[in-house]
Image 1 (cartoon, one colour):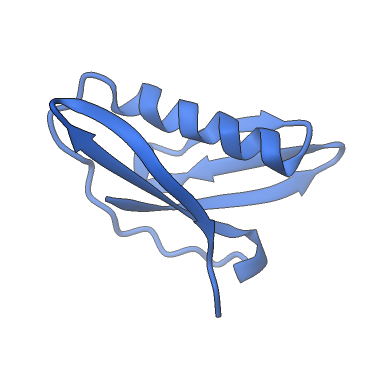
Image 2 (image 1 turned 180 degrees about the vertical axis):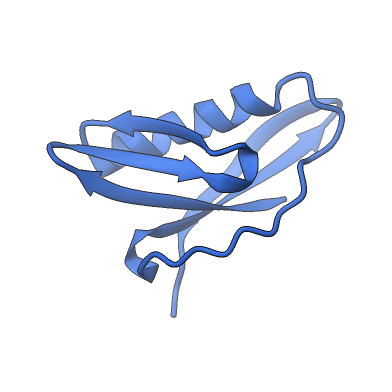
Length: 88
């Protein structure tokens, strides 16, 4: 399943949000850290769920601030398979 991740700088930190996962969010000191943190936050949110939550969020952020996180489920375990930038 693929979900939109909004990622942007706020002050001296970066914030990442996945709206379709009940607005799961996290902070990091730089882009690399915030993307690692959002992977963990997404998996923690999904822990214990039987199925993937539906998607439908449409972002109004600039493409430069949007990522796509891909999550798979194997043997009842969710795992992040990829996180990538939106390309035009």
